[in-house]
Length: 313
Image 1 (cartoon, rainbow, N blue to C red):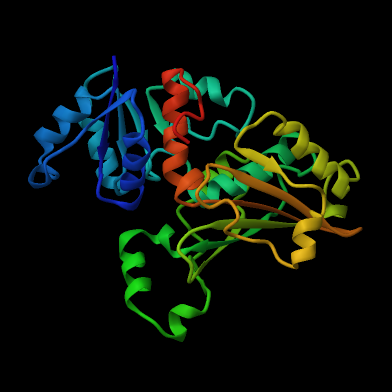
Image 2 (cartoon, rainbow, N blue to C red):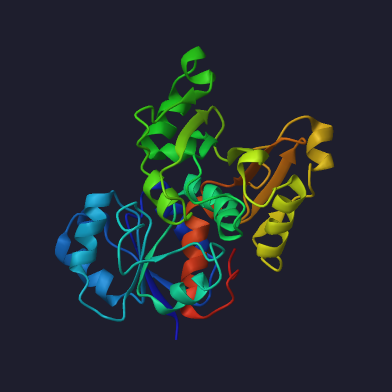
């Protein structure tokens, strides 16, 4: 029998992309809500409870309301909002986060899809904290450059309608130092305090790269760039969606720049270590609409259903 899937919030950027993934699948039947009933709580509740897997592509408050509508214990919810990413009882939907994470996702009926910036940051930091190279008490900062699709429909419309220097230049944002991904970046990295996080949006549709600068002398175990590289290679050995670039990747250095868009239209993450004798920058790039959002949700669904993790991706 086919798995019944429902996307609550199917008109948003993430919801539309999930529909594209699911439309290619012969093992999935997508339940759809009539356009005039998208805000009808009774109809939404009916579809949420009829689904084997329901994706919540909603603002935080609406996602919490949707959860309250679910009474069927067999419905698995995958929430793409930030509402449940650090909540008790919810599995964090990043399978590559740490050993045992896949088992949590398989077993849970409540899965919180990670944020795009957070996914890249966590895949960089968590292995280094687990290996004891980055102290949990370390003061960490991170910068992310992202395409404008990460801002959703409103920002996409703004960039596609307006020209001029104001939007042509990269724009740092979240200047209150309270970006909505910071709580999950802190909780799931193993850090004792929140990183200083600076996201920047540019005039390109999609693609994202997070960079974290490190002073090697401030790390544990006399850390070297080679040790950082070794930790990543061990942690991600055998991962189909995480690729560790060669140390000081010659292709990147020959180009003279790190291509933020190189993972677009894939579910992959590239991780690179660039360093001199005293300092390092670790970097991760992904498609903010793929592995950073919709692709991650489908990957989590596959894991939960016990099918090939990369099916449809």
